[in-house]
Image 1 (tube, protein in one colour):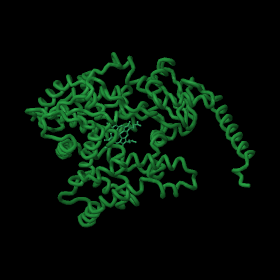
Image 2 (cartoon, helix red, strand yellow):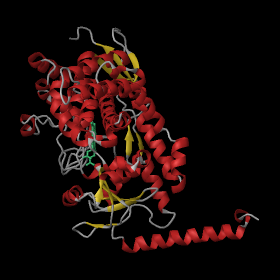
Image 3 (tube, helix red, strand yellow):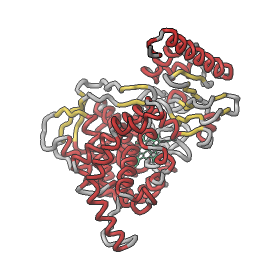
Image 4 (cartoon, rainbow, N blue to C red):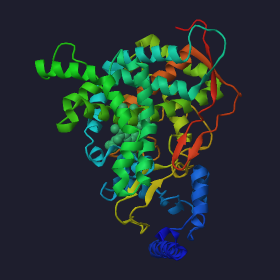
Length: 502
Ligand code: HEM
């Protein structure tokens, strides 16, 4: 008789699993000194987890009110999520070393990218300083080509030349436009508009997540087989590699022939990676995989933010005229240059205010405790749990923002003149009460590029089109699942090309 046929063995297994679960629960609950929002008893906590996963913002707001800004925890399906709210604890959260509270490990628990891509990938992050420094330094010089690509992409995905209202599926169109425009500085033209490259790079994030989840669910010895048989990521890297290979080989040939510099050397992300890569990373496949990682960080995040801003604009067309006036006057003075974008405080404020109320995540400064961690007030975070702060404690808190639940598009106009005069515009400026891009040493490396890209696209939209929602005034509901918050994917925005536009 096979072991699985014996009910006694099955009962014994279930009993052992229940004892192990209860003893783990008892052990952790003995050490816990943080109140729980919702049930904390074994199994019942899954009800709390279900509520949190399906309505994260509502639950986090309840916690903020119920515990009056003191730390609390909520159950999520796989772990406890701790929330800290006071400025002192938020400061400790951001200052803690990665060996104690790690942002990458927290992101990996949610997106599963390390399982999908391999641990060497997570330990070698040589692309981060390239994004942070080389990309940021080159923004001004690359602006004309980014602008050119954005216009081409908009004309393709939001058909031009028609004077009637056209319903456009905003999620698809904007994601494609942002991907193609970013591609212009990642791989250059005309490769950036190759429909296959756009398709592959847009499929990358979902493929990484799918592969990561499959791997996570598989027992250790099965992982390589599962990855080989069912993983979506390797075939996707292979296809992208085939597409990029002629370009990479040609550049490698030029590098071998001319050394570090030559006439018309490309100035894009692929080349910066090629200049910096070492060892395995120098191979054409290694470079392709690394470039895809930059797409992973750059395109979905920026697209999500632009879609939220577009929905706001389409819901409030009355704001378009003031934005348009500002853009047209800045462009008349300086053309479509970096200087002009510095003279668009309303555009900047509109974006910042949109994302204050609704960004891509319902948690901010999310970290994983790599070991037991105790805050200065004694709040204890057990190893393996996640700790973050919430919009309710920061972006939506009355201590930082007057009338915090109201959308006030001009809230940040003139709010931070020092930052504006230094050329660090307000949208990308991080602070303890504005955490869209994180804060401190791990703050988003690409935020200055993201800022100018989004400002440019908003400026283009208001000067080229009138926009409306299909159902006037009703913002399309976002899709929230745990800490991830995506704009509504089926909503359509009506576009009409403006008569007499520049
Ligand atoms: C509006 C769009 C974007 C948003 C909202 C966003 C948000 C974030 C956030 C919240 C983090 C983590 C910060 C932390 O844990 O403290 C981050 C990290 C990062 N982002 Fe962005 N991001 C955006 C666009 C971009 C773009 C366009 C790029 C690249 C061109 C980029 C590259 C990166 C990189 C490389 C990191 C890792 C930084 C590090 O570990 O030191 N991001 N981003």
